[in-house]
Length: 333
Image 1 (cartoon, rainbow, N blue to C red):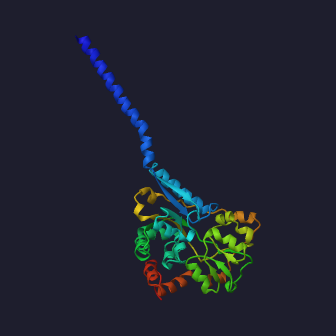
Image 2 (image 1 turned 90 degrees about the vertical axis):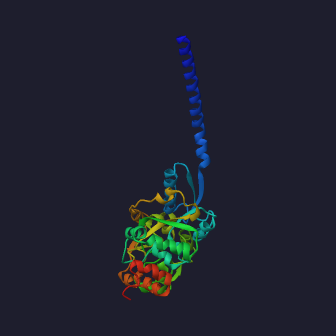
């Protein structure tokens, strides 16, 4: 009798084990399918051409988000122009044509000059690290959200990251030796710098990064600044200009912006992803291309005081002044 009960017990235990194993096995097979079904894909366009190093930063940001989400979210990276031109990125994210984008706040200068305060604020003050510290820990983020959501009525959130260094004066077909030589010069720049060089007499054209070299090549502009020697080399600036001028104060800092459609901002990984700082050794490569590197003339420094232009904007634009006041602009005038 006891032997029979033992056999029955073993048989029952065996059936339970096999049933449990079947359930576990089915779950193991089903889980990847559930994971794939739950993956959300965002259309994510940068404002940079594919060969620009800045587009690599956009790709790197997407990789960080994809990894941190564990497969729940995938950013499908597109280059500038794939869906909309660079300067139309904000509107595309706002309307839902794109889910997110990668650029710089200064590209929205045409919508509001105050946008420049959150990416390329006036010189002779903060560096980029200090500017980002103010943005996230000194009240800047709330002001930027107010500008984007309440004043410009855009349904998106801008996430600022990656501090960048002082920018060179740019590429010229002939060496500039004084501030007076900017009078009548057809020059590409963006943001506060655009109005600054207009005040110096330059004929300023605002272009996205991918359109600068073709404009130089066709003679539509005489000179241009973009951001850094690495991008300049990849985009072909040395092929269309002779002199690379450094030592300038028109933009002493900048940072990237990942703009996200606000109704979709549920994934914390998008907010946590961040770039890392590094130097730019590419300036040595310019000499390898046979292009002379020249310092900007000292008289230009006084002629291109970005803080003076910023104070002028504070008096002319109430929205600019309200936000600029938090950066110490317009004080003591």
